[in-house]
Length: 157
Image (cartoon, rainbow, N blue to C red; front, side, top):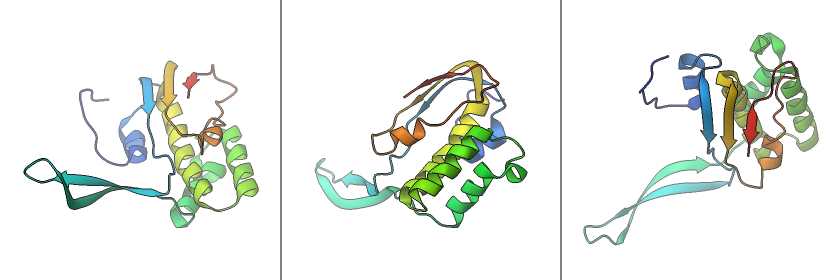
């Protein structure tokens, strides 16, 4: 793995393409919070006062649709994930869908779960993962189990 490189793009694609197994000591994750809000960059005029000029920086809105369905299928179908998703994760994700249905929260959770699985893959056994999240989804995200056959990593939320 190349070091001193800044990758730009979807972290899921970057993790899968460039980051080898058990190669990371520390992960600090500050993901979207599923706030159902749009965030803008507000520009200032020459005097430093806020201007009406804005640019959409990020939409923190999630919807159940084809992308969420595809991530769900990957997380819960061993034929699709090739055994890369622990069965405990598959079971919890399926139970959550059964319990809360196909909605914004579930769309958010499958997008986060697939990334947490990849982050767990790249984390060294002695590594730590710090997840910054808000109370609306933190209890779901904390349910991400580790493989019972491995020594657990330090999961701090």
